[in-house]
Amino acid sequence: MSNYTVESTKVETSDGAAKLHARFFKPKEAEDKAGGGRDDLVIVLVHPFTVLGGCQALLKGMAIGLAERGYKAVTFDMRGAGRSTGRASLTGFSEIKDVIAVCKWVCENLGTRRILLVGSSAGSPIAGSSVDQIEEVVGYVSIGYPFGMLASVLFGRHHKAILQSQKPKLFIMGTQDGFTSVKQLQNKLKSAAGRVETHLIEGAGHFQMEGPAYDAQMVNLILTFAASL
Image (tube, rainbow, N blue to C red):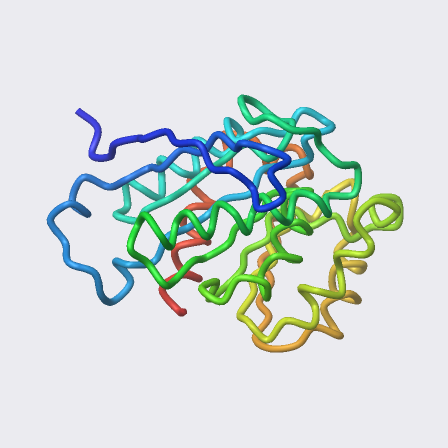
């Protein structure tokens, strides 16, 4: 018998352009806990590029892992993905509204004032641009942020928002990431404000890290970072 439950809901965006399908992974023991300490932290995960088939199902393993460790986790399909309505954008700017809408729903319905935003692949720039637009976000984790030259054609205008944010941030990347080299990551983060941490995974490629084989490692890294907030 699993020690978590999953609930589904629909969240409407502020621009009315999409109804988002979201899933809440709730630890069983959370029902017996009063808020306070880290128990009130909710981890919101933002999936990879919708245009390339990204959807919340890719984050299910991580969300389950987080819930099994006692943390509330929320995944959702951005506009145009999965069971959400609306149309995906190429550059991810419309999707910032999706992240804001889901975080607003989390605050109103899950009784929290503390959110950790986690972005995977193209979800990283989208989440990064949302961080300072949501007061309740207390930290940010990126898994495979596409900082490289080619990816920057689409996502380059997102870089400034997360690099200038004072909120604590963790960048996780494989040393064989095909979109961003280790040197590109390090050069970008030289200008980053606030507390910045990096964790390199030796030999891992960009799409490998999106796979289930790395879910447990990602959960450990996310929770170690969460414990420091």
